[in-house]
Each structure stands twice: as structure tokens, then as C-alpha cells.
Length: 444
Image (cartoon, rainbow, N blue to C red; front, side, top):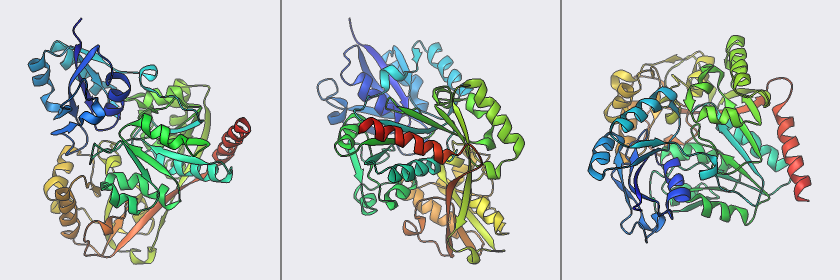
């Protein structure tokens, strides 16, 4: 039989992983193209032959913009389209499925058995139901608990291969490694806190190779998920972070609902900035999806490195990009910190230029904050020009990335940090201690 022709729909993450574990050596399929969405500047590249498998894909695999999908289906007489990216509403996915099926192809979502890898080491996975739920905060709490347990551990981060696709394994030990791998602002946002804590952090494109490298020196692996994707690894413990500011979203987005149904524990984050009604609705929604998972509440506490610099001042706020773009948050920690210090937040939209202006048009829920988009040199320049064109006293950087080192900001800047703290009983920190105690007993 001839192999079935396939397209993998993705956003430079789950799509490449699904290819590597399901398609790369699978002679039943011929992947004719990847399509790219959500993230700018990731199309018009080629998934390299050295990762695709030179025998079946000697020229690699082209990556096209998602809006070309019907043309590709028609040109190659495609049999199957595999949806392989995250944080997409159920309604949107079914509209895409209807479009694909009407074009003559079948539409498929791959699950755990076909995509999850197994480790020789215990895996603790930190995932979420939406982008911007505060997953990084909870991952840092897990890291702190692993340190206290005296276990050797490594963090493996969900892929963000927005630069060189030829680097199968990235191993970050110091901040200098950010330069060595030429990471984008979006990658730096996710990596910096771990590196500053002295954690061995792995990322890249080939998660089997990454796993094998991490397993060489650690007792336990912490999976730090991306968007609301489910883990690439079969997990011993699945901790799912929930955002009460978007109560009900846990049953409306893919694969966030998958995570909710897989959860061993729910962490309701940001309890201190949500009202009781939001929190209770979120708990009930989670219970409806998974009544067996344990439930914990965490406060997300925001601090500013130089509060007196912005107190009562007029400020521009720059927030974590993915959280307020496809994550659909109107604002983040930066705006919260600014309001706590009685700042007036200046509307940056009239002065937005280039790709930043287009972001406001594409994501109309964003109002008085600037998304920290920096996927290219040109986009960084647009970000710099938008910030500097605004009439303000200072700039509040709500992104974990050290943005002031990437672009030239002419106004004084402050950086915002946010950390997780237990919000009542039962304590999430006690649960983490319990997990790593169990792992230590199992190992020794």
C-alpha cells in the first residue's frame, strides 16, 4: 500500500514532537508539510533532514503558514491532517476539522499512547488548562521542593524552537547559554527563572534525545509544560494549574480539558487576585471533570524591584507575550503591580507600530498593556519603538525576560516578579514534599 499523505498542523512545539515519535520512521505515512500558527516567523522554514530522517525525508519537510492548508491538501491530494498544537478552543478546532473534512481529508488528534515517551526516572509534570495560568510559578515551587528533598533533578521545558531547528538538545546551565543558543524573548521568559535558581534546564526539538541526556545525571525529572499542552512524557504525578480569572475555561480549550481529566492534583492559582465566586466556580468546574484529583489553592504574590520609582507615577506596562495574545488574558502581573502602587497605566495603543500594532488588531482584548513580542530582530525593534513613543514616567516590565538588555528603553524601568505561596489548607507545599518523599523512598 502507498503511504497516506499527511499534514501536521502546529506551532513549533507539539507538532515536531508528534512527528518525531509517531511519523519519523513510520512508512505508513508521508508528511508533505507542517503548517504553522500562533507564533510569528516560524513558517517558511524547513524541518531539517537530520531530524526528519534522511531516508524518508532527504530534503526535510517544508513549514507553511496555516492559511495555506487548503492549497496544500489540494496540491498533494492529502489523506490526513493531524492537529498538533495547544490552547485552542473546542469550537475553533471543530471549525478547522470541518474545513479539512470538506476539503477531502480526514482530521485526527493523537493521544497519549502514540506520543508520550517513557522515562527510566520518575516524572513530575506541571501543566495547565490555559496559557498564563501561572504554571511557571508552580513549576518553581516544585523545583524548590525538589531541592529540599536532596534529590538530583533536572527540568525539561516544553519546546519553543523558534530559532535554529537543527539543535536537537539544548542544555542550559548559566545565563550565558541564552546567548549561545540565541533564544527569543519568549524562550527567555520561560528559561531565566530556572537558570537563575541554578537548575539544569533542557529544551530543544528531539525529546527522546533530551530525555536520555537528562536521565544521565538526575534522580527525578520535572516537566515544565507549555501553553496548556499535556506532557510529552508518561508521568508519575500530573499537577494541573488552573486560572480562576478564566473560570470555566478548563472545559472549553484543547488540550486543557485533557489535562484536567488527567490531573492527580489541581492547583487553583492567583487566589489572592480572584474573588470568592471565581474561585468556587473554578473548583466546581474542575470537580465536574475530575472528582478524584486533590485540590490546592495558591496565592500569586507580586513584587517590584524598585517600587519607589513608579509609585503614583504614569507608567507603560509590558506583559508576557503569549499569556495576553493567544492566552487571551487582558493583562498580567505587570498591571497588577502597577495598580498596587497607585500608578496610572498609560494606553500604549495609539503609539504602537509594526508587528505590535498588528498584535492589537489580531488580539482585540488587549487594552492598556504591551505584549513582549520578540520573535525576530524586526519585532524587537517594533517593541522598542512602541515603548519609547509612549508618554510616561517609567516602564513596568511584567515579563520574566530581562527586556532592558535586549532593547534600548529610554525611560526608567522596573522588573516585576511573582511567586507562589500556600493559600490555606491543605498546603500545596506539603503535597510537593509528600511527592518527593515518596520518590526518594522509591529510589533508595
